[in-house]
Length: 414
Ligand SMILES: [Zn+2]
Image 1 (cartoon, rainbow, N blue to C red):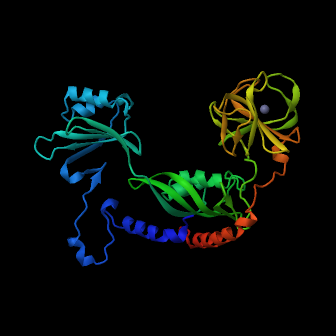
Image 2: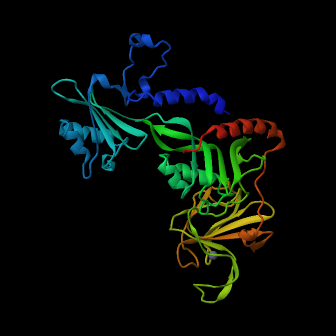
């Protein structure tokens, strides 16, 4: 595993690049003797693979109600050529899918004719399509390089984790990823003012801009003055998070089968049924969520049922071990490929929220079976996931030491 110490040189280079102001990353070199700067030939600056010096480069964003034809013809490209571009490029990019706000660039001839030679459109943050008009027309799709950069962050909670990170200019996706790591131990709706955290993570970067969080490598969260460590470690084929006492930070079961939902009805032995209009036990926990919201298997297991029944609607049942099974009712759709005998991991999507069967509105009724009886999962002392195995203990201890030291080195903001 590539870890922090090995990454220090890479990080240093990165910070040098960051502090070099207007230099583009691509033309940066590490200079041993600063007096020799002029003797180093400058590498040409490339944009989508083309040397910008050889063209007059014009770029803009697609405006509202602008069509492909507007962009093309306003740069002096003929209608017949445009038709050729649309037709020949059909398989690579459907021009009807042009979106306002996306970047496009025209590489023009560097003389008074300003003839358009190359047209590039960014399909999304990574993919772009190139129409090269220089010889006969050549069209291809390519991807911008996505860099993975290790970064760290620290914060002291004033209001919410999301705002704390957002106000400091971090990608707010980090808040979501961090709350997922701690989903089993910290309730992020009840974090305290003064709680604080540090995190080391890999960020996905395109054109010096963050496009997402690849993974959290290590984190420290101080909640009610109590330390919670989460250190990523692989035990064979399973990548998990473990704490300072070599325990898994996860439980064998997720708290809920859907994200960002609310419990609309709890498990109870006696409840007035809204559809049947009579008192009857409600042996599940209902989570209200919009139709189509993904439903996750709350633990590893094997599918035993995936079908429709009159009361349950579309439902799935997963057997986790000889003691526990879970069941998910009223799905709008069971996920393709989910059928009896199929293995699932904790967090795998098994279906989507709906209101099939006996249900008033879109929700998932989550049923928790222990030794063949339905029980309230919130009253169970659910087992923790497996700790660090004996065979991995020595390796983990070493990594843990390095990681905890790296976390301690991250300063809190003033
Ligand atoms: Zn229910």
